[in-house]
Length: 278
Image (tube, rainbow, N blue to C red; front, side, top):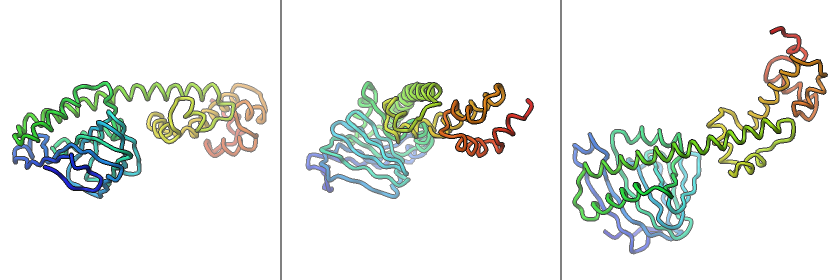
């Protein structure tokens, strides 16, 4: 079926399906699907649509906004959205993508699980299973001869593959954060800023901050300050260095800044901490 929609070009197609009651209660079920050729006028912005959405970018790129986060989806990426929540996606340029809306009893749990690990955009550059599953779903939808068990199996396979991709991504991100931590711990007594850290691990400052806090529980700035405070504690406890000498050794730009920060984080002055017996 041809569709007329702003930004959607004439060669685009959309297919509709009404799931059976059994599928609604027991399977992942297909609602509608399509292949869209778009120009940069294409944009969708909704507060709520009662399904989940998967889009496979075949050519071009799109910007995706979900919650308070914005993502870029390039060629050979897959977008997974919970459309029950406010969301937006728009073409950045001429765009070709396959898509389908679906629902199912485990959809919410799977979305939350994957979003927590990876966000809503997944690179499938080296994955061959997901494109094949998408092709199988759209081919069956186009013919109008839906085997709901077969559709559900393919959607579940996509969920499985996204989890595997997320695990690989998690391993890579963990290595990046460990690299950043090693840099902090060897340069803590020098001036360190967010831009410098992000550049060191080849991420944007925004992405680096988000990933760093996810893995450590602290912002990069908080981590640096905490490391400096803990280093100062060791010097206070194990040496006779002056407060001024310790402030310099721990990377603070003045002893006043050091004392203020130390008190804020420990509720003790450096002198009071030094007098504690452990």
